[in-house]
Length: 411
Image 1 (spheres, rainbow, N blue to C red):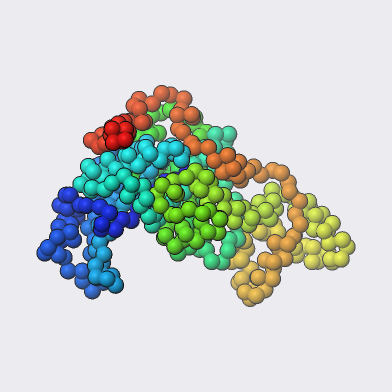
Image 2 (image 1 turned 30 degrees about the horizontal axis):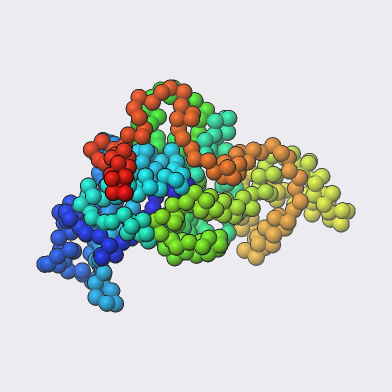
């Protein structure tokens, strides 16, 4: 599903009616006397929601008005960044569908008007996307835990062009991230992340959590066994978005309306999950087998052509791999061998035929949830009624109902 999105508009596409709402005031960007752009040739003013806004239930877009030197003189742009689910539900546990686009568009349009930005619906609909996060929340309610999934993911040997980091915030299995310069794939425990944000927003994977902390404050509102795993693909540049769309053979212009699409979200998430899942078979299968079964499988595959000493060497390697994963094995082996030797050992390990024990199912839950790609709604898992209506949005801001009524009046 679509979560965070950043739109970029050129100066002829919008009008700033209340420049003093920005910090610093945007008067020096939109009119004389103009701000000096400095050595970097860039000056920016921001208008962001505060912590008190979030705590009061007001969620609205982050705005950045920037002026920079260009080949033709000066360029003034407005960047609009927001979480679509938070704009509609006040949280991003609940997920949106493609058909919710007009609802999001109307709510965004109303908020921009409230913040002093004049922009037409057609311009907003066709706004170019400079960054987008596609995600999927997966409810685990059969005593499968997020740490089970993330623990298995932590064993893999991902491509050398990615930097893999594991963060646990004192809670094993909280989050794991695959990071590159222009994109990032993250898996994390949504409920545990929410707990961490209560202590400090900086300790959480996600920002702007203050408005949704109260969702799970009511004791016994949800089953104790409920956990929510989130997979999020963050495409951080327009060039990366265009490149990925081409690779997936998706023939659309990267505009707000075009990319707010459930099928595109599914294709993107499954694309990255496929890359990750292909690295898992050996580590996940070995981990759940007895050494004697692995040795027997290796001997059968060797067809009598491998000496017992070599079989024992392979057995030791596979058991170590199942325990600490490729990265852990690499760290241990590299102390006693060259890089070239480790690369040879790794090729041998990946080629090993290890029988599937059938004991592991946590990753199967992820594959099933991504294949179905049904939007999650918290009310489905609630055992106690919520004291307030989750559809009623931000206090003091435009509501979904108001936005819808105004859209209909414009039509």
